[in-house]
Length: 163
Image (cartoon, rainbow, N blue to C red; front, side):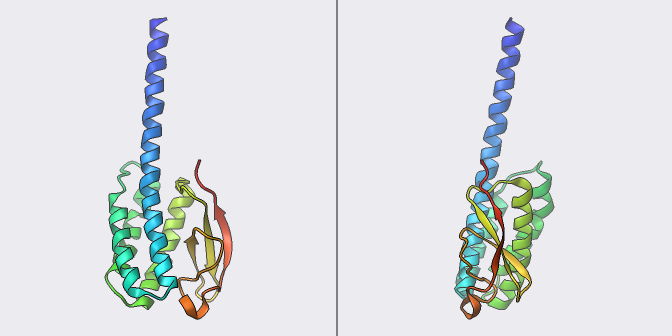
């Protein structure tokens, strides 16, 4: 009976430890998502200086994610860091938007594979740019063309919040 009780306690502690790690991972990933959405909003508002500042926060949030043993994160972290850093090093909005397309593609892949987003996100697509981005609202606010074509695009997929 003592052996069964000991096994039960070990299993319970293992489950709790795994759950705590998953929650910490999801929280870190969601800090990245929040910072990404700030960059997206700055680009949609045609504000290269704000996009630069928000991308610096994004770069910090990406670096803060401590997932050493997660294959998906390991596969994309350098790509995410590269694009966020490039956006953070210039106020030139055209250059920022080029890197934002790649950043969006890679963050989508991370979220799709890891199912770590805390809130529902929408994959939106700009047919003129032939690129996608993530948004926390269904309403289109195109970060590739900003005020020039703010509502150009459509929702292609909904990423439900992780449970």
